[in-house]
Length: 106
Image (cartoon, rainbow, N blue to C red; front, side, top):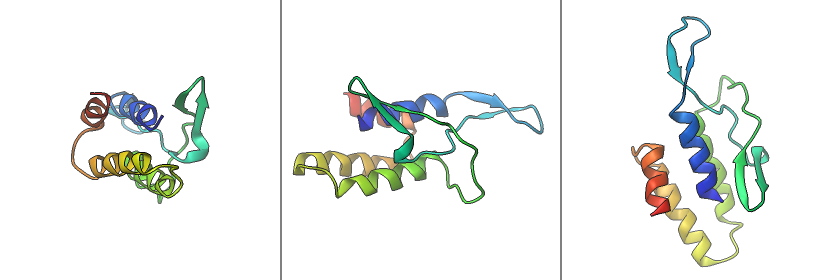
């Protein structure tokens, strides 16, 4: 399911939207990546409730790292904790989200 969340972030990050001030195209962002905005349905995780970014919001990637880090201690097995640790390592690199998701689905 974590891969589903990353895939959702990847899809958002590859989209462009018009800037409200200049009209030029900018990268889209979810703006409120948090565990309460992940809906699990039919075994798939979906990001919901795209929000307005607050002044202290560090971006979707940083928010995903924070969210996944908090989940790490709650994982039931060592295998799950190790998988999450691998995801966190990838998120902390300069790899684009599309490349991270591709690696995880291999």
